[in-house]
Image (cartoon, rainbow, N blue to C red; front, side):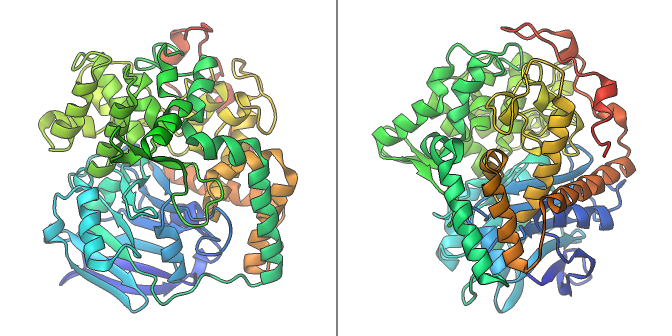
Length: 579
């Protein structure tokens, strides 16, 4: 990958493209690329939906090569949900296809003067931009069918649904999977709204005629890749738990630990959690002819995705992720897997972040719009209100913080305006530190302390104690920022945290790819550099230490069954970025 594609959507006479060399962005990929571009080129005080914001898409450093489980893509911008810097990460085929065309980044700039939506086709011959008027208001599944009919299912699609067109702050960006279904989403932070503000409905990427990226030191790369794949298969989480049950293997684990946020974070256990467990979903999928073990992109060794079908064997959705099952399930008092899968499908096709929307519906239930447990009502809110952009739907589509404000509630489980995912910070205090201090707002993937607090991966830090949580979250946030730059899936972290040889093999893959000699210390330095850029952007956007806090009620309201509050002090939180 040796070039950057810039598309000025606001150029006089219509969108214009330029192709630039990497320049100062040489060596960056994924989150490293998106955060560096945003930090360097976007005025931190700009409006997220204005022409000064930029929308950046970047494959990881080794994406598009034969490196195992390395097909991730990053989407970056200033977030309309948090007001700070944002990187949202997705699987699917687009990262690999884009990388094989040689693009280290696609940057959308400006806003169209004609208020129209466009289709962008990128292939080996160049870039074509045309009207997307025929696709306006289409949901992503309908759009995928039209794109497939026109270009085949060998291309990749990056697109927004109606939520992105309406510039909802909970809007996601959809990426097609191996079956050309729009099931993989850069979900968090309202990145879909920013893509919508650029007037881009869909990007079609066709790598026909290109070849897989070749490493500079093929033998070194090949040997390391073999060791790395063997390490993933050897680890209990990446080799057994995730392939068998997907990420939803966590439902029973987190519920038993008393850290499963239920009824809008009122209690830490859900009586009907077993009905939503990964084991239950996998059994249903197997019985009905679905598939609990499936890779979201080619070359994935973990295969934690899946295909969920109804009792007649008809496709409903991808296998919902743990956080999706929690947000639309236990958080809302809904315990029917078919309903959760339907809500997951609606989020994906309307183009919404499943975490933000499930948390928002939980807030709406607390506000009395629906009773907890009203499955039909939850479907109606998504389908008829958010999906159609009614006044109520616009409020809900703005996310949990906006909904709580509109209905006069204090109890909005958000940090920097972004909803907390499926782990209560009072019972998993390491993840509470991550939620509070992450540059991204409340985001479990930013520093997944659950691994060590609950799963005992990479060590053992008591989840109910404040002791050791700052160091744990700090180290994981640094490691994650670096990992997000590589293109490797975050879930390899389980194996590389526990198995030194697997970590070494991962570093050697990068070394073989570029014929360099990175060390573990260099990986740490990369993570620190990325976080420092993000932290600086947020500071310039107006963020202070007061923004690195959980809502006060997490310190005031004890969580059953452990009757604990979040008690990591503000003074401790303020030391996280000391390195």
